Amino acid sequence: MTASNSSLVSESAKPAVYGESTRPPRGDYSIANADYICEQAWSSYTPEQHVLYRQLYERQARMIPGHACSAFLKAVQQLGASEDIPKFENISAQLRRATGWEVVAVPGLIPEAAFFALLAARRFPVTVWLREASEFEYIVEPDLFHDLFGHVPLLFNPQVADYMQAFGQGGLKAEGQNALEYLARLYWYTVEFGLIAEPDGLRIYGAGILSSSGEVNHSLHSTQVQRLPFDLQRVMQTRYKIDTYQETYFVIDSFEQLMQQTAVDFFPLYDQLHTLPTLAPNAKD
Ligand code: HBI
Ligand code: FE
Image (tube, rainbow, N blue to C red; front, side):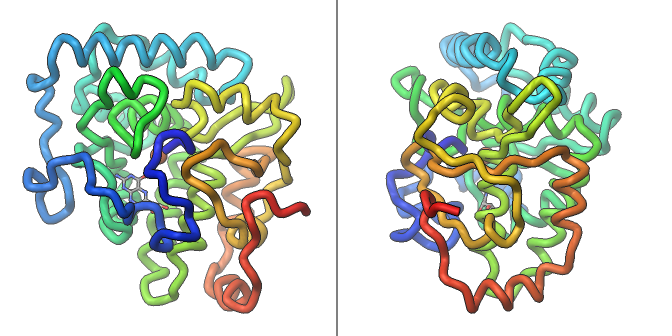
């Protein structure tokens, strides 16, 4: 979910995790089952929505060369551009073959426990509703385009696929550890807004940036932000704002490094973090 694609509630004034926005959710949750899964109802998309999706796709596809990480570019190329909104079952068929993941339809943001359970089962929740044309540059919360374009391509990468499942498993284990905000920050500063140092230079792997019209350039070229080496404790200590571009980005050297640095027992880290102050999004290192 990009900074400009989220409810106007800064993290400090809102529940620990951004899944519990204080605004009424956009989706129709009455159609979801107990796991929060619903039907994509592909035939319900209007011709105008197919055109809007294609325009969003073309806007981002023009922007990502030289900006998105190589794994993302490779997957987007493999997936190919579709004239219409992709059918989830077609994406799932390709994804299962690649990394054993599938996408499932959800009405929108879902509670943490349900979200973790889906990731732990290698099932990525993709929002079924698409933003309005008036929200071309800005949406309040993750929509179909953010999830499908921003998140799904990297699930074709084996390391990211493993990391996402491990994140879900870690989330389920964190039940009762009062650690949701730490996990939300880890998700935010990696899966949503992560940067990676590649041989050709700094590149983007975070879905919140890759699906955003303005943050692609901001994240790589702004002189007003700080780009810190990934450090698990520092990430978990650092609050984030959900209604502006990020002020701090964390840079990994590789997806292997991300896996290694997060393949630790989080519980001692949670105990440590409970004794430490949280840091502002722009706290200097
Ligand atoms: N639900 N559908 C959906 N998509 C998300 O990315 C998502 C969510 N619920 C909670 C959530 N993300 C965050 O709180 C993560 O930090 C767990
Ligand atoms: Fe997201």
